[in-house]
Image (tube, rainbow, N blue to C red; front, top):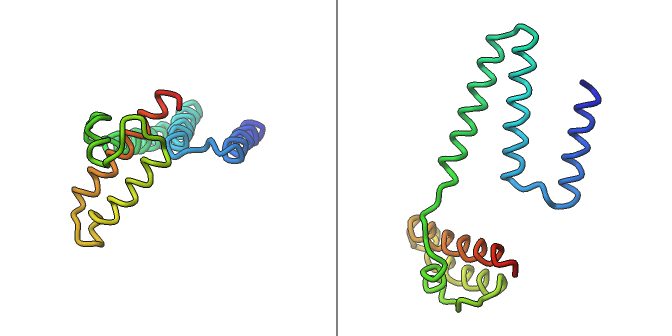
Length: 134
């Protein structure tokens, strides 16, 4: 068990060092650890602990899935919203987002809904840019 924990710690350290330990990957690691702990408890006869750990892991995983949902917005609409061209790069997208979020942020008199739409537009454009491989 100590060897497995050391290997897992080393893998997490390597991901962190490489800059690849994103929030999404960390959630997967947490879910895998919860499932592994629940199975370990179940195999050692501690069924009540396994049930509790499994239920908490499932609840957290389901909660994360619900929270991550964003409004669906097309890349064209997102570009119009931010005022950038369809071939804009990440630097242009982020600059346009910074300019616009400064106007619509709730701290500056805007609304949370408008901020969420602007954030969704930026996220959509950056995701579209990554999917195109630029």
